[in-house]
Picture (cartoon, rainbow, N blue to C red):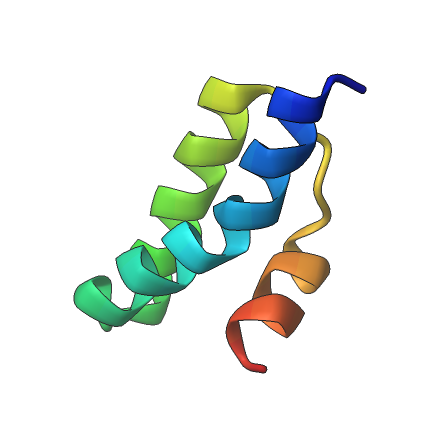
Length: 55
């Protein structure tokens, strides 16, 4: 994995947390995260995404 990709993956949970905070709605959060995941084609389990956001 390139350094750029590692750095991007490191800030991704922070970005997702901000998106989730703005969205408020659980359904919309899940939908947005799924779209972002698909767009980036990153295999990150939703449970892991939620775990990072809830820290």
